Image 1: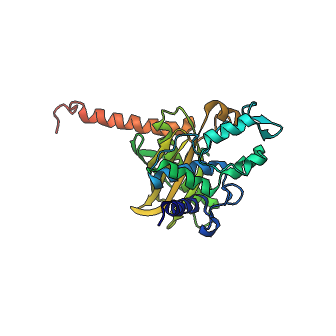
Image 2: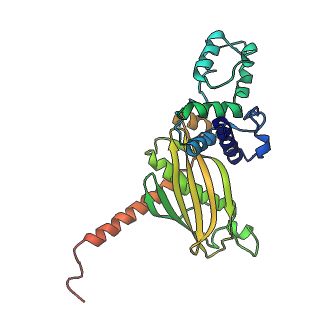
Image 3: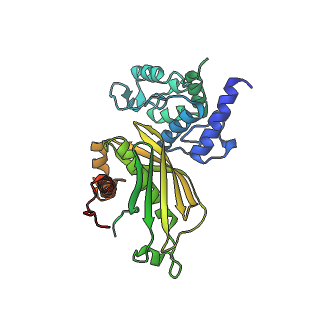
Amino acid sequence: MPIHDEIFEKVQATLVDALGVDEEDVTREATLQGDLGAESIDFLDIVFRLERNFGIKIPRGELFPENIVSDPEMIANGKLTAKGLEELKSRMPFADLSSFEANPEVEKIADLYTVDMLVQYVRSKLPA
Amino acid sequence: MRWIWIDKFLEFRSGQFARAMKNLTLAEDYLHDHYPGYPVMPASLIIEGLAQTGGILVGEAGGFAEKVVLAKIPRAEFFGVACAGDQLIYEVTLTDLRSEGAVVEAKAFLDGQLLAEAEIVFAHLDNSRANQIFGPKNFVFTQQLLGVLDLSKAQARAREQAATAPDSSNGQP
């Protein structure tokens, strides 16, 4: 089985345990908050479980960056500025920002947190 | 009624494990309401006792520098009930600890049998922000609850001293 699929299945099991959702709802495209109902405190639980299940260390703020939207240089009129986008890209190189870039509304940042984003992140943490 | 749901610590290994005791008595009002004529410990209060045991374990591991709040109970299972006159033993193992919070595995035993088990997630809150939002009282370790741990430590010290003190019976049989 390709490594990507293996990681996906483990991430899927992790989210079933952390969020109490059905396995079939945990698709690659599903957003953690919108589709799977994750609340802020669930992110901490997810970090603990990913560390345990994959044997990786996840430094604070690396998977779910903190304080990006609190900097006035990063935000204008409810959208990320060019500088804000660059910051987000550098902080979340594992996230797919291609469609977000067209309309980088702050409120849509949560939609970047998808199941596939977790898979890409875990993959980046595992030895090649 | 005081919001302290453990009576005594029996064992406390910093950053690892804690064991506490909770005696159930008809002197406690809630048993008369839950249920009239059939006094059983509410499952939610067993969880609270486990969380208090675990919360102190988590807080002590960080030198009580952080405010600890019960964030989430991903899993809890109950296998029986405890009634007035029973003694519950709570055993809590710290499984994960990081700057944002901690996870514990918690078990309640009655007469040596597993009565309940739960996984509990705690979050650390920044002290200044936490006081703004909640005030100083709504946390796992209030001063009253910390007193339970202090008492256990004092009792352990007293026992050690008694064990090492020279015989004071003046040679009388």
